[in-house]
Length: 253
Length: 279
Image (cartoon, rainbow over all chains, first blue to last red; front, top):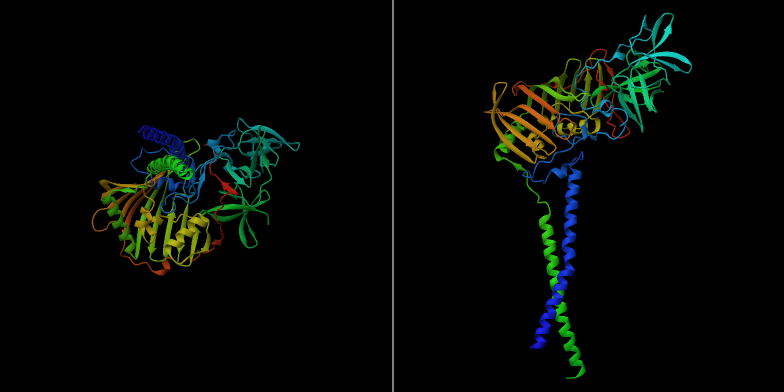
């Protein structure tokens, strides 16, 4: 009897040890579960986060999705997940991301945004310039600059000229459009392609093969190899349908 | 008792509790595993009000069974300016569809005017302002043509959710919840207002009550975009009677029109964004 009691106590002891030994298994599951939850939350703002949406109980508290994506087009349920891009809010933070990075969206929308440089006419002469113009020197030649338009003095007048490559300005012209070609970001306005440099923006040589949503002001229509094209400051632009609307690709014949 | 019997006795005495211990370990492991299984998110079926589902299905079947139809739409689309201000841009769409492989739309706004044609063999875009056109070879059905246009060329065919061969399945397949808001009128037409959610995108539809269950209004809200912009289509002049002959879908270049390329959408190596500083 005494031996039997000893055996029972020993069995209970070993059983308890077994329970203690398996407790880590129990708790090993819990961190995995929380990790899964974290993954779900991270997936939620993903542009193609459909799987996270499906299967989630609609009775759960509504998750606020961060506004971090753009779509090429609006107006479709069928292709709601097609061509979604992350908004690159982390780049060019030193410029003014809100002003220079935006959704292209459906370019079929119709909002007219006249800019000062839209009125550029090559060779146009003015007796004076607006207040706030800036004097520049590009390759030793004097220029005057006002919001996307460059002038040179001719007698007592100021003549509008093409944007000179190498011109350095502190601020981009109003309405500059970001064009990413390869790994380089250009800012396109008034027929000039600006790149960011320390302390400002400098006009670079126009990149070839990039698509811009609008022609520079004052382009001249020409025929190249029997096709329609436009010429501005020695650069040619070929019309092409992009996302269903007409845009323009730079090229050299 | 010889030595062998004593050894067997000792081994069996120690093996029994060891066996019990392993059995207990197994039991606890099973409980732990079961508990973890219970903690997995349950696969919940979409919570769609059966009445909303039935109304949407009825509308979808009505459009799917129509061999041809015409409709006009007024589109209002939220656009966020660089200043952060949100404004609406408008346009109109005149749409003709003939199943299984004809489509024509004219999209007009103050400064834009374009046509889109699909004749079962190609999709053609026409910029009526600048007199440019471009064509791409297209598959033989509307669904495939819509997918090709969107996925390879970034062209969202206007009102494509109403054009597809099965508008109900097209609309419901990603829905996680749907409710019937109730009766309401759209431009004086009694409608039933339904609201659905895809999670990050919500959409609402107003379906005409009565014998012709057509959509009278569609709103898509993009909650995952800055400012949660909306796309609104107000539909009118539904016509299921007037026959639509071939010539309506066959593109003929206008006099002096120039043919230009249709670019495939680029994903990574080049993107461009619009707008700049506000005037």
